[in-house]
Length: 440
Image (cartoon, rainbow, N blue to C red):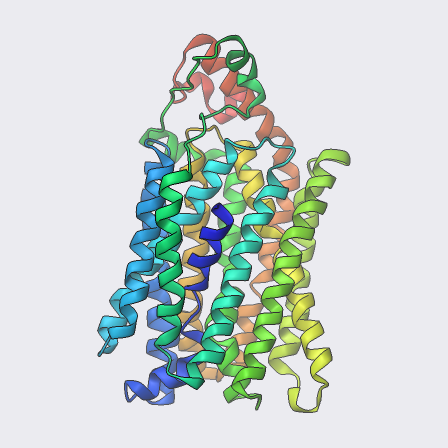
């Protein structure tokens, strides 16, 4: 059910991208206005409003019933998606896309929070891979629908086609999804749950705890890498299809196919990378997981740079699609592994906010990325602007590799804090349980 919800909600994320030019013509925009207002401003609103919303929803997920909260978050996104069909002005479109961004920004951290209490550290990366492949598939399906149906009808119909089944599934989800006990998968709490069938881990997050998350090195590395790593994703999701069609000479269906193949590669990378990263974590060392993802993410710059700069009209389409798949695979290993690492180093009552911090930095990167690239396009042209943004995967990979230094220590510190908290009934914010003292 979580995978289905993730697929449908993610399908909404990129419905504008294949038809930016068609939308621009509908609103009588010039090409420059298209890149600024549709590629830059709406993308910024979509993600920048989603960022603080993710933090709020993450906080709520650590204090209330997560299954019911998930229902309302999804409803918040798919209602505006359906209403997009009826917009008659740019500002109506702007508001509706911003509301959908709030929903998408808050939904996935909430889902991952739930999964943290359904699966333990030895299985989380594999499970998260399934959800992330669903989001990748949803993005690819949405992009394909928009790229194929949009030119055949108009750019509005894909929003209706995506929203209606999403609203139906949301109702089913409310009826069948149950709230799992918090902390039931944590080794430090296993004895308590085994000894007392009525045991409830009742700790809830406080504002002081939310800030304390920033003292955990693994958290900080994962949070900050999102600012850099999502710059190329902002280009990929917002501009690439239109760029391949308008600047590189491909037809809209062919350009859409390239980005769909990138998304398919992303699905393979999420599942394969999640499985391999989990195997490395379980059988080699915990540090090998972040080293693996850092190397693969940094390597994704190569196929993306090639797609941006090569003469695609003289290149066999098979080779172009192969590179798109390869780039998608390399760039997508970080998704499940980053979230698994965050689940592993944060207590059950703080995971929603930790995942929201990560989502927030991702959203800031996705929102600021297209906006910054839009400004760079005016000065340098599309190609040079894209090349600069793609380089964001290099510092992203370096920061992920640094997690190898902190991951094992941070996990041990979290389990020690958790055990001491339950045994002595000491609240987390007590200075005796700070991150620094937990490692001494």
